[in-house]
Image (cartoon, rainbow, N blue to C red; front, side, top):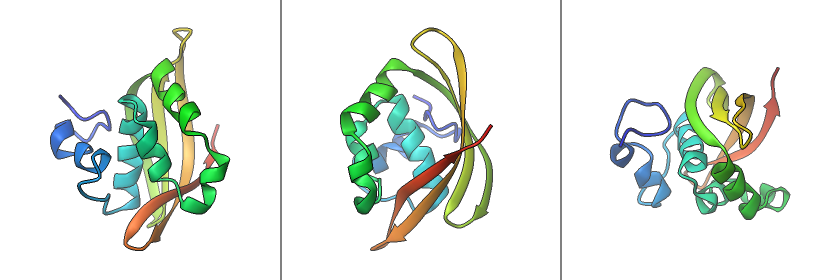
Length: 125
């Protein structure tokens, strides 16, 4: 199966090793791609695990899992990586009402103990 993150690779050679925690994403962009795939699969556990520990209290695993389940995630477009820890992207999906949506965000990531984590995101547009 093609990886949901739109890398052009198979899921097995792209995001699956991150989802199985066999290895960690080497860059903020790789983590962003793996998190998009985690919404598409969906995998709420991975989404929580890759959120900065100090920020997890602001998120809910069940909500993350549900957001992945109720939407059909169709495409990820990386717009820019203006810094090592910032990724601007557009996530395309069809919502539970059949409406096409675009989630445009600039996300901030932090590297801690040799691992990248999602910190926060600013919605754009």
